[in-house]
Image 1: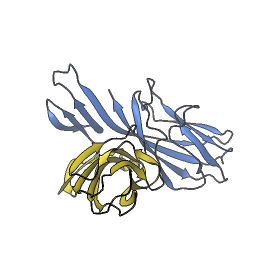
Image 2: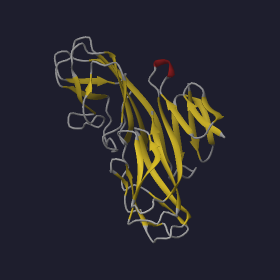
Image 3: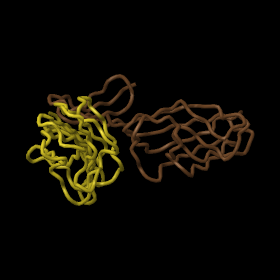
Image 4: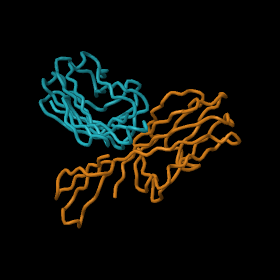
Length: 153
Length: 147
C-alpha cells in the first residue's frame, strides 16, 4: 500500500500507507492546511427486527469531523428476500446525507449515490452510518457501503 | 498525452490518456472509489432566432461542477448575452453568467453553491434574446467526477 503526500517543502512523496494528502501553505508549518481524499467502507447485516440499522465502520475507522462527502456506493451483498426498500441513509437519524428517494434492498446492484447536498459533516466524527428501511428486512440481508470523502485539517 | 493515476496498490503512475484519477480504497476488498478531475469542451454555433441551445456536452452522474469558461470565437451580429448554464431539464447550474456574445472575449463563471449531479446531465445555455446565429462560442467545463 502506497500513500501519496504533497507538501510545498518536499513536493510529491510516496510512502507506506494509503490515501492522498495535499498539504498547501508555507513550508514552515505556520499556515499549512491539508486536503485529504479518503475512502472508508462498512459491511453489516440488517436487523430483521427493525427498520433502522446502524452500519458501523471497522474498529478505528471514522468519518471524521470537517469532512465533505463526495459520493457513496451501496451494495447488497446478500439481497433482501423480501421487497424491502432502503429509504434513508445518513450519519444520524435526522440527516439523510446520502440518499434522496428509495432503493430496493432486494437487488444486488452496486448503486452510486451522490450526496443529497454538499455539506460538511460538522464538528463531530462518526463511527457508523444509519440506514432506514420501509419494513423489517429479511434476516439474511447484508449490505456494504463505501464512502469517498474529502477532509480539511 | 499523459494521464496521472494514483491507486493505493501502485502509487502514482503516468499512463497515456488525459486527466487526474485518484483511486482510493483497498483493491483487494473491492471497495475502491475514484475521484477524477475532468474538463470537457464544446465549440458551438449560436442558434438562429432562438434564445436557448442544447449542447452535446454531458456531465456524468455524481459529478460536481466547479466552473465554466465561455469564449467568443466569432462574434454574433446581435447584441445578446448568455445568461445561464442549465441542464436539459432546466435545472440552473450556473446563473448570472452575463456574457456578451457580440464581441470577442472570454469569461469564467462558477456556481453559487456546489452541488452533486443526481443523474447524467446534458448541458443547455440560455440567452437574453434571440441571436442571429452567425456567432461561434466555445464552452469549457471543469468538474469532479466520482465513480
